[in-house]
Structure formats: structure tokens, C-alpha cells
Amino acid sequence: MFRGAVVAAVVPAYKEESMIERVIETMPDYVDHIVIVDDCSPDRTSEVVRASSDPRVDLIRHEVNQGVGGAIITGHTRAMDLGADVNVIMAGDAQMDPAFLPDLLDRVTDGGYGFAKANRFFSPESFEGMPRYRVLGNIGLSFMTKLASGYWHLFDPQNGYTAIRTSVLRRLPLQNVARRYSFENDLLIHLNILQVPAVDVPIPAVYGDEVSSIKLSKVVPELVNLLGKGFLRRIWYRYVLWSFSPIALLLVLGVVLFGFGVAISIWIVFLSVTSVIATAATVMLAALPLMIGTQLLISALQLDIQASPDTPDAHPFGPQEDLA
Image (cartoon, rainbow, N blue to C red; front, side, top):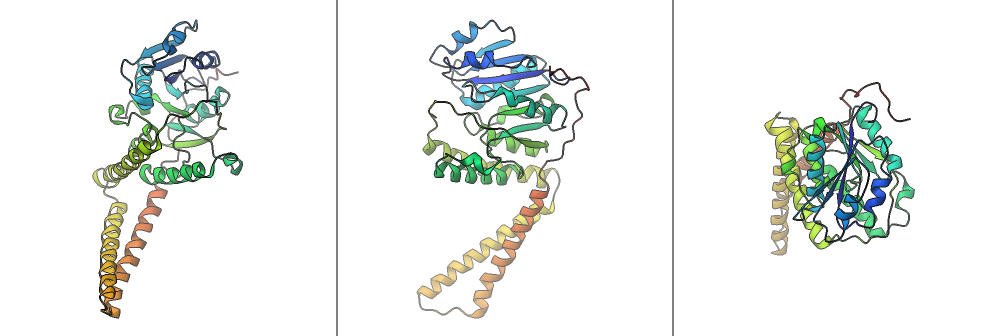
């Protein structure tokens, strides 16, 4: 128990027979349940877990591989059944340092946030030693996730070191959250639709010797597709269906005017190619919608940034402090 809250660690594991024992052994005492989900590993991951003498361990094995998101969803469901108040995600490869777990838990138990996640890139030095393409990739993905999820104050969206209140999980349609590598991104979109206050926690990354099995040619298109659909879904629920907001009006008018301006601009270029000189009135017919549409879209963006759920609103679990 941590500060009056029952804590469960959800550990998604796939081919982690060499590291899963270390994850169990280094799990802090204030973690009440260790829910390990073996996502149909072809190695001895489950056998190693069963050999553990830690009474907190609860093993679940998928007979069909469901991806890291599917394993986490299974773990969350089991942890809720066990009566956990807060769930944390600890990777099965021991790349999430438990020494920083209190920093995450503090934000959720006492800080009033519904969701907290680690941020590896909290200083310029965090990018040292990382290939330039990965730096640019992380920045680009973070911006796209900010736009899609509406959490403009969060960074490092692929970081799975998180803590979340069970009360938030019970409100989430977990069956609809993406189940593979896009899980973290889709989860943020669902959380924003529910307006759950979230916070970044600076935590250094721990890198092991394992080589990532992620195929960018498959993951990138999947992420772009998910973020695009997620953005439209978020706008529909938050700013149209549940409360018609000026943001929706500004977006629609901005897109229509900007699109009209682009279409006229293409027509003017076509006329120029055919040696027809465009009049000043024709040029203004393209320029004005482009300028006004751009301004409307910027205004919608500003309002969306201001609406980012970043103010804690939950009560602490209790005055008790179980961590020495």
C-alpha cells in the first residue's frame, strides 16, 4: 500500500524469461499485487514466473498473442478485480526503474491526477547519444499525439511507464483501446475525451541490450491512421456531441475556407500555365479565404491548448503514508 492506496503493478511480458525474475525481485514492498501477463511467449517466461515465491505474483497467460496493449488491458482488468486503487505499468524487460515509481504514484495518490506518465526527454541532455532520426521521430510523434489527444502539455507519448487510478479505468472503454504498439497513444485520446487530468513526470530512461522488434514500416502507418481517426473522434465527442464549442465552429469554418482558398489557388496556377493572366480580384478570391481560414484554425488550436486537462481534481486516498 502507498499513501492509503492499494497498488497493483501490471507487467506485460513477451519472451522475457531472462529478465522477468529481476522484475519480480526488484518490485518495491509497497506494491500489493504483481499481475504478470505472458502474451503467448514461445520461451519459458511463464515457467520462470511460476517458480517465484513472491505471494503477490498473479500470472495470466494469453493463448493467443494480443500485443503489448492487449496484455496491459488484461492486466488492468485483473488488477481491478483484485481491488487495486492504482495501477502502474512495469515492463517485463526491467527497463523501468522502480526507484522512480514513488514519483509517479505521488502525482496520482496525493497530487490529484487521474493519470501520470514518465517523460524521458525532460532536458536537452536527454537526447544525447540518440540518433538524429530517432530524435526527429520522437518530436514528430509527440506533436502528432498532442494534436490528436489534446494533451498539449505532455511529451514522450510512447513511454509506457504510467500510473492510473482505478476509478479512471472503470470509466474507460478498455475494449475499444488499441491493443498493439499504438496503445499508449490511443489511451491518451480516450483519457482526454473523458477530460482526465494527466501529468508528465521526469524519469530517466533505462536501456537494456535488447533489440526492438518494432517494424517501422508497419507501425508508422498504423499510428498515423489511429491518430487521424482519434483526432476526429475527440473533436466530435468533446466539442460537438457533448458540448457544442466554438472550437468546433472555428475548425469547420477554418477547414472550409482554407480548402476553398487552396482550390482557387490551384485554379489560378492552372490559368497561369495556360498563359491566362489572373486578375487582382481572382488572386484576392484565393488569398482572403486562405488567410481567414488559417487564422480560424490557429484560434481553434489556441482554444484547444487552453482546454488541455492539466488541473488535478481528485481527492487524496488518505493521510496514511505507508512508504518509509
